[in-house]
Image (cartoon, rainbow, N blue to C red; front, side):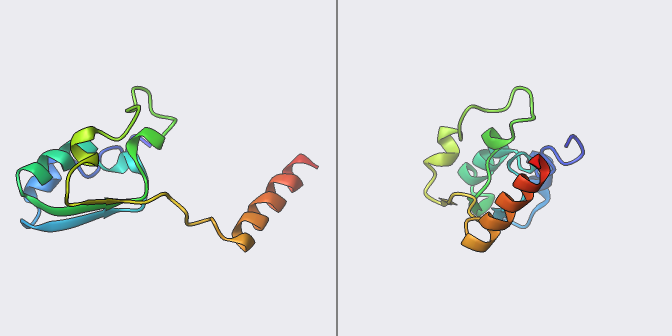
Length: 103
């Protein structure tokens, strides 16, 4: 979505309270990961955690192919897979909804 692409960017981070901890659990491309890496390396951000990433946003042309190394290797980052739907009932509901669309 163009209206939310990089909603959190260098300008927004520059206005944040120093030491801010940023958590992205929404959509990877809502956060400019390059700007986050810069903010971490300049000690503007206290830390960054995410379970969604820019490279996963398949609809975006020119999306990154991977998480940038400056972000990935920073000691004040925490990453996990996006597993919000990885429970039996939710997966079953998704499968039933998909099957109903086929039939």
